[in-house]
Image (cartoon, rainbow, N blue to C red; front, top):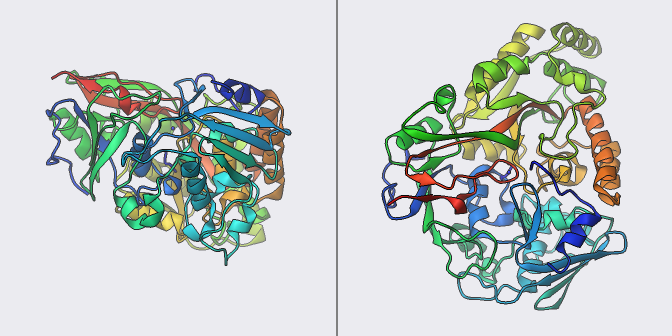
Length: 546
C-alpha cells in the first residue's frame, strides 16, 4: 500500500508519450539525533518487507525506498512527469510497443553502472510469481506476464515482451494497449536493481544498493533506518540535506512527543490526540494541505455473508450507508479529511462527485436498515462484524466510531479489532489471513486513476500479485479498465475509469470513507517542507538551521 502518494494530473494518453520523447522504539536514542549536522530525523514505521522496491506496497517501506531508488521518470508536485534515468520513452502501435532510451553515466552506490539490464532484470524478477513480489501486477500488460503466474514457473523465467537492445535501450512489447505505461515507469515496481540483488536477495533486502538521492547506511530493526546523501546521484531530486534518519515508532503519539521535545525533526503522521492543537502549537511549524490519500476499509470476498453476490452486495451497501462520514470527519479529523464521493482523490482528473450510485457513500440509516433486511431474507445474519487495524497507527478512533455507527444503525454486534503492530497487521493482510474486515487506504505510486483502480481492484492485482488484497474479481470491471488503458486521450480514459467506478459502487469491495489532507509538523529549525502530487512529504527538500 504503499506504500507508498496532483492539482493537475498528467494522466495516461498520447500527451505523456510526447512529453517523455526526447526530454518498535520510541525513537529517542538513535545515533543521529535531531541536533546532529544537517541529518534530518523523520517519523518512520517498521517496513513490512525487506527493502526490495518491487515488494514494497506500504508506507513504512515506501518512504524509504522512494529515497534510495531512482526510476525512469519522476513526478512533480502537480503530477507532471519528467525523465529521470530515461532519456526518452516513445510509443507506437496503439500503445502496445515502447522503446526506452536511458541516459549514460548513472551508477549504483556500489559503483556498478545502471544499464538496460538493471531495469529488465528487476522487472523480470518482480513479475515472476515464484519470487512472491507484491507489485507483480504492475507488469500485467507486458507480453509473457501470464506465463510467469503459473504455479510451476521457473524462478528464472522472464517476460517475453522485454528485450535489451543495448546497454541504454529497452524494447517493450505489450499484450494489450497500455497508455499508462510511461506513468507507471516511476513507481517502486519499476526501479532498477544491481546484480548483487539477485546474487543474494536476502542480504540485499537488509542492506540495499541503490541509485537514488540517498545511500543506505543501516537498518536497526524496530529502531531506525539511516541514509546519507548520494554524491553520485544525477537526477531531479538532489537532496538539500546531508541525510535522513527514519526513527521507527510504534506510536504516533511518541513521535509527536519527541518532536515537541526536540528529539525529532519532522513527522507527517499527526496523532489523533494532536489534530485539534497541532496547527496552533507555537513550538512547532504545522502544515495542512489537500492530498491524494484515501481512507477505506476492505471487506474481503471470503467472509461469510460477504461474497460477490446479491446478499454480499446488499450488506456492503447497508454498512456503507450506516456511516456518517461528515460527522466523523468533523469530530475526529478536525478539518484534515473530507468525506469520500468516489474511489479516487480530488487531485486526480477522473475524480467525480456525479457518479451513478454514489448515494451508497451517503449517510442514510433508514435505507441501510432496509438493505440489511433484504439481505437477511436471503440468508439470516449471524456472528459479529469486525474491523481490524494496526494499533501503532492513527486508525483507532475512526475505526471505533464507524463500528458504533454500524452497530447502532443495523443492530448487530460490530467492533474494532486492534492488532499490535503494522508489521503483524500487514502480514495478515498480505497473506490473505484476515478473518474480518480491515482498515485500508491508498497513497498513489504514480499520478493516474489507473493506480487507484487497476492496482487495487482489477483481477490481475488479486491473489497476492498486487494491492487487491480482498481478492475482488469482476470481469465487467476488468474490461472497463482495459478500455481506459486503450483510450487515445485522458478525457476518454477518464470516462471509462468513471464507468468502472460505478461498478465498484455497486459491489463495494472496499468502503470509501475519506480523502486525507497532507498534514505534517516540524521543529522551528526545519525549512523546505513540501508535498508531492499525492500529499507525501518531499524529504529531499528538507533542511535545518545549524
